[in-house]
View 1: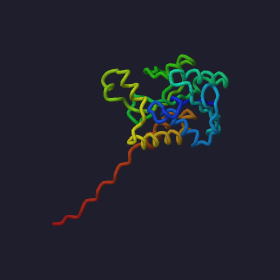
View 2: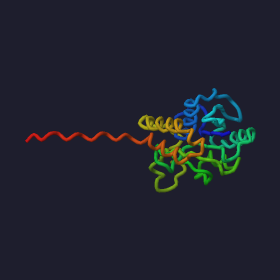
View 3: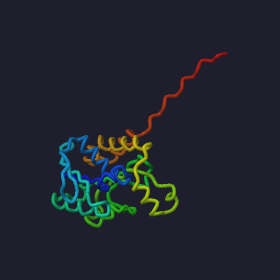
Length: 208
C-alpha cells in the first residue's frame, strides 16, 4: 500500500495558493485514476484507489501546513505503511515554475509541512517537488517574509495554464511513480509540460 500525501492549507481562501499545489496534484491523481470520494479521517481528507494493482490512500491534511505531520503519522500508523511507501507532494521554491523532481529523504529546506512530517515519522519518505519559483526579493538572499508572502498568494492567471498542465501530467504518469520508476516519471512529466516549439516559417520565394 502507498500513502500519497498532498500538502496545502484547507479552505477556499487558500485553494489557489502556490503553497497548495500539492493538494492540486493529489486531487488530479484521484480524479484521473477513479479514486473513491474524499471523506474525513486522520485530521484530513482521504480517498482510496488502486493504481496498476497497487492500493493507494490519498491524504490531504486539514491541520494547516505547520501540523501536516499529525495527519500523516496517524494514517501511516493505522495502515502500517513503511516510510519508503509514503509519497509527499509539495511546492518547492528552489525549482523553476513547472519543474518536477523526486527524491527520497533529505532536508526540508525550511518547508513547514516537511518539518512537521519529518518530526512525526522521520525523513526517509519519497518527496515529489513541484517548482513554484522564488520571489525576486528572495533570489539572492533568504527573506522569510518574502517567501511566505509568495507561497501564500494565488497563482496569477497567466500561470494557471502551466499549473494545470503540470498537475495533469503528474496525474497521468503517477503509475510510474507508484511503481518506483522515478526517473521515467520525471522524464515523462518534463516532456508533457515542455512548451511547444512553433514551426519555422517557410522561406518565401525570391521576388527577384
